[in-house]
Image (cartoon, rainbow, N blue to C red):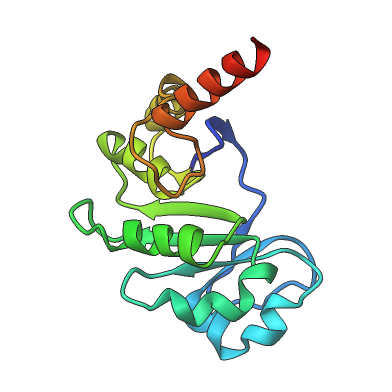
Length: 171
């Protein structure tokens, strides 16, 4: 499955480990929420990077004690009509200050991509190579927005204010 991260198609360094499989001692892994919560302390302190696949029907507050130690949080879109993962992403970025990789997985569509970026997602597991190309080009296409959101970009208004301030300071 192609991965688009920071606007580029890239390989996935994280190995998806099924619940019934042994967890390797090192290396980057992505495990289910249920498996992570069985022993969250041990999983979040292992030598290799740890990521969790978090369903959209679970409260992200359960992750808060471990955010500093999680390299990836993959939020699940079970259908394209179910947008609860958008809210989870905004909460993780804006309320809880999560700075690691926030990955969208599941049923994600091209026309939702910009909204996902704005909610704070920076990585996307897509099903087709053609979607990966479209996502990568879209990430580069839009650079200025009017609304403030979880992706940390300054708004058009703040950009204008910075320009005015720098112009008046140079006079």
